[in-house]
Amino acid sequence: MEINDLARTHHAPATPATPAAPTALAELVRQTRGPVLVPGDEGYDAERSGFQRAYRHRPDVIVGAECAGDVVAAVRFARAQGLPVAVQATGHGLSAATDGGLLISTRRMAGVRVDAAARTARAEAGVVWGQVVEAAAPYGLAPLNGSSPGVGVISYTLGGGVGVLARTYGFAADQVRSVDLVTADARQWHVTADSDPELFGALLGGGHGLGVVTAMEFGLVPVARLYGGQLVFGGERIDAASAAYLDWTATVPDELTSSLALIAYPDLPQLPEPLRGRCLAQIRIAYTGSAEEGERLVAPLRAVGPRVSDELREMPYADSHTIHRDPSDPHAYDGDNALLSGLDAAALHRVAALTGPHAPTMCVLQLNHLGGAMAKRGGPDGAAGSVGHRDARFALRLLSPLPGADGPGSGAAASEGPEAALATVRALHAEALAAVAPWRIGRSVNFLFGSHGERPDAAEVARSVHDADEHRRLAGLKTHHDPENVFRFHPSGAAAADRSPASRHHRPRLIADHGPRPAPSTSATHRPADAP
Image 1 (cartoon, rainbow, N blue to C red):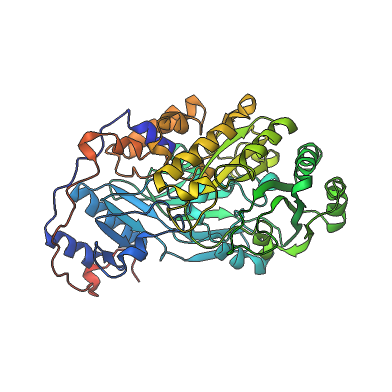
Image 2: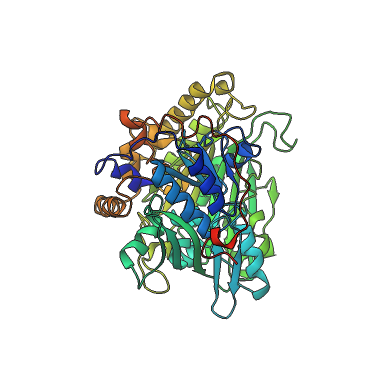
């Protein structure tokens, strides 16, 4: 994402398209296995929609890719028609939505293969983490997945990937062995640390916008069970629990990964009664050591006082998603974050007060304890990725629903229109993050949710993900591999096209009157090279 933003200073965006002849679309249909959809087609709206409902793609053409050959055909078509390209699997991280152009939907590319002897897995572009966890579990192995089983493997890993086992085994990007990539010239590449170390490293932590990843091979770790769950404290103990958590993180081993969430639940009828209108502090824990040692390690937290709930237990790794219990239903949201060199209780208390029950809109605060293996550069093959700010001790994350964009909300913002609600959310997040300015060293690309490429300070947002030298290096690689900025729809990167009068956005629409389309051919002469 950040490299797309920087690239705007290196080259002009792709020239807007003129309407293509219906024969061009018909040829695309013949060259692909998956569906090709245009506005008005049945299934178009469902295909363009993802988990993030505040922003939805509105492309001229959607290719529902079923294989790498479909991706190649889609990129080749887009280049011929002068169309920029967006990619979506689950849409959790969507923040730069197309208004025109071509969308490659990869959710049908859902193959997973585990090599238990090599302790590796290969996941296609549409695979979500829950599939990999399930496939690896019978062998006593686990991936470095995130907290939600419905998040896509590829985009998460390209951003680095801070997961359930992060302090023990590092970023998900550190375990990647190879990447299958379709670049802007519609060529397929199998990229490894040996074949192209510069591109390989750039993909792992800065890879959004360099091409379309069609598959990825990564290492698995020998974890079959863990000790974990949540300790939940009521509002009257939030300050004590937060202070105790900060002190406690300085004492725990690398085998323990944790986070603190402070949530002021609105008084809404659709929420469970135990949560409605309550302020809670949730401490989430994943420890790969024994349950007995885990009990000893969490004793200082339990000493804070009575808990609303205490769900710490030994569990199979396949149940690790129950630690965080992330929402599974699509919704509208916006989020920002800060990577911190440290933090004190007074500053955390200030942030909690700003984002708590008296905030103008609901805000979920999450503090991730970093360090451990994440601070060590380089994967199992010694390949160094481009994950930024590995020396951070904490990640402070703020996320707010966007009332009006998708369903009911809470607070003053709920009575505003979508644009005013977003302004309210952004102002709240900025004020809260200002409270931790003395420790702030950057941002995590994985936890930027929303149209940050359209912010007045979009360039600063992009630069904050990496240090200056790495940012320039990634910008150079973006210019080399995508000189026409074909892959421009990524957080922070979309601002390059949006702010150029010549590309607002790829108007006129590709096909105003596309006419009847032929059914997809089953002739072998039109099948992609990797078709069975």
